[in-house]
Each structure stands twice: as structure tokens, then as C-alpha cells.
Image (cartoon, rainbow, N blue to C red; front, side, top):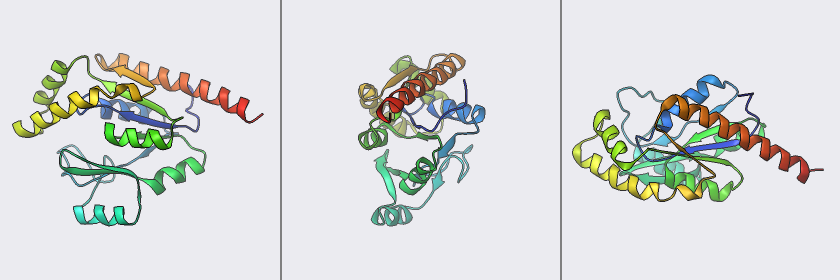
Length: 199
């Protein structure tokens, strides 16, 4: 795919659908992209780094940022706060650069309401059974947490219609090709409309 032009890309989907892996591949292949690092109050997993995967903060600090209107969106997911920095996103957009956000479905829904023309992509598993197997293989949650995430995934899968595109992540390499194809097609249409509007 050619260089990504200045657009807002949202990648979302249920936990364990593969959105983080696909987002990482996209950033690796497209250095022109800025990644909006979300804030969260949950504890980091063994392979996660502060300031790279998330900004891991205390509940007190997160709530202070809420009071300062510092989030474009925020939500409580599985008992933890998650939020997207408003200033970070707005600064990149104002500078005319492409930015990608990886957010939960609830957060994505809120951002889509504010930026309805964004490139919103839902990453879905081939089936709920496959998703459950991925949870079990990941082994990062307790049985209770896993059951909570499975129930939430059922709800999130029912909301995929609010996204412009859905990618079923059955084969990682094929899914990545589809991700690039979706972004490429979106920016062609977006800039064609943009030129018509601004003539």
C-alpha cells in the first residue's frame, strides 16, 4: 500500500480478536502513522510497556484527567478505566498527519459520533467459539475475568454495524492484507469527496 494520507483510523473489536497484533503490523509497515496511546488504570500484562502499549496510571490520576476534560472519550471496561487523550489526537489532526487509534468498542462508538467520517474498522473473530479458545490460550485472565470478557464480547459483536468496515481475523496475514486494502480504499474515496467539497 502507498503512504497513508492524513486520516483518522479507528481499530476496534472484542478482546482477543487480534486488533493489537494487526495495529502493530500496520505501524511497523507505515512509519508515517502516529499511534494514539491510550490511558488505562489496569495493570500491565507481562509483555506490555508503559508509554508504548498504554500509559498505565492510577485511578486518582485518571479521574484528575477526567475533571480536566483531558479525554476525547473514556469508559470503564472490565472494571478499569480506558481513555483517549483529546490533546494528543487533535494535535496530530491539526498538523495534517494520519493517526491510528486502537480502542474498545464502547470508546470507538463515542469517537465515531464525534468524527463520523473517520475510517472505523471492526476486527472480528471467525466465531465466538474461536474467541473463547483464544482467551484460554492467552492465559492472562482468571476464570472469572475470562467469563466476564466472553459476555462482553457477545455484546460487542452485536455492535459491528456502527463501523464502516469489518475484518474477520481468521488468518493473520490475510487479515493484514485486508486491513491495508480497507484503508487504501477509504482514503481514495475520502480524498475524492474532499476535493469535490472544496472545489
